[in-house]
Length: 399
Image 1 (cartoon, helix red, strand yellow):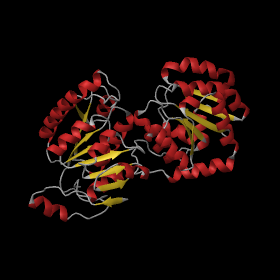
Image 2 (cartoon, rainbow, N blue to C red):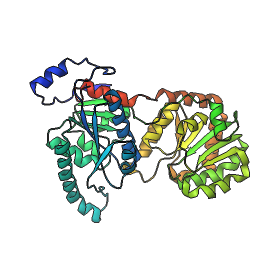
Image 3 (cartoon, rainbow, N blue to C red):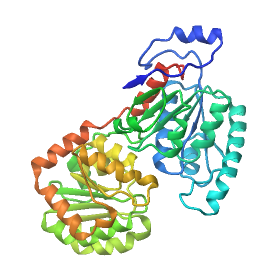
Image 4 (tube, rainbow, N blue to C red):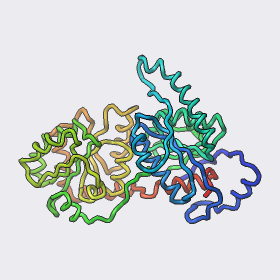
């Protein structure tokens, strides 16, 4: 859904005439007229870096000649995942904006100015046709620098409450793209499009029985998937440990991502329950894990939610209490209102609350099936391609 009209960009006459010959709407299959140069900034966490990578890969699927450059930081997750994906990464200086009076708050304006200066240098050197920001503090100096140089700016935010950096940049953006309809009221910009959240996970056609067998579980028993982040969330792990007796009584089996640091301890916790609990330090094959599951217990991050919806998995969402601006709780509340998820706050989760919630949901087959249908109805498997289509339809990228 596109609302409003994107700001016009300055083009020379020849480029404008060439662009007018392009078909409107979807750009799939169109002949390349100009090899686009796109700079993408986003990172700090996977919630910003993963959508950025998905967008970059979608651009290159449409145009093998496209050149994409990333801007990030040395400390963020992008410093690992972007080079691993085969893209170049320029690093700039960034500092988080503290909500309390401390040294980092005093340093913030100086580091921001340094980051803008570094971003200006990158942009002048790379000369992109378009800058895309997907959130995180690195997006601030890059987006501001792009606006200063008159380079078209598009942004994408994946949360119900867009981050403060993108809320500021939305006023200068030619196009604001959002993962959730709920977010449209919280950003500015003359053009907004709800496109969903791009992930890098493919919906693979793995049979449920085969998926369960891959984890050494029964083919026909109700299955709970527990994923608390790459390191596993301590509060969730403790609640699962204490809930295991009740889950066994409810005839539920568990795939439990423990995180590598606690794998040995959690495996010992699970040992009395034999093959009813499969502990894994880190799940590399998430499609198989999702296909095995009837219900999931996870955090409330936007990327996790997008993946759950892609596979139609109902969930108990336990939002991270320390997430910036409490955005995970806002995500979880919106998903609970949508009818496919139940939220348990981090302060409230324990063996009793988790065990009761899982048992009640698993014991209601009709209700669980309805939740699964509602989850699947929100799945957007082609969000990255939708983003490229939207950029092209607004003449922000030429393919």
